[in-house]
Image (cartoon, rainbow, N blue to C red):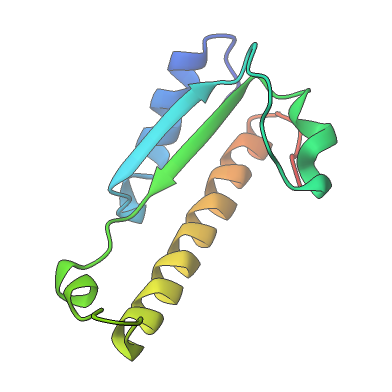
Length: 107
């Protein structure tokens, strides 16, 4: 991926590069002018330098969610951490794509 001054072009490149990850949701948000974000202290000072955010998501399994009655089941617990791991891997991949394009690292 090569950096572009066009945000929509960059997003389309990210969509193409991440197609193999199986994300159910991939979107972006313009952070320009957003105020009052309640972010963790370790990233709060860096957000002011960011103009856009990339958001990815995975659906949780309906049968696993249905297994939760009074408290999370073991199936839910395992499924949840598996999905979180997959999202972490997708975030690392996306960060790498932006890094190779010449954008600053966030982390």
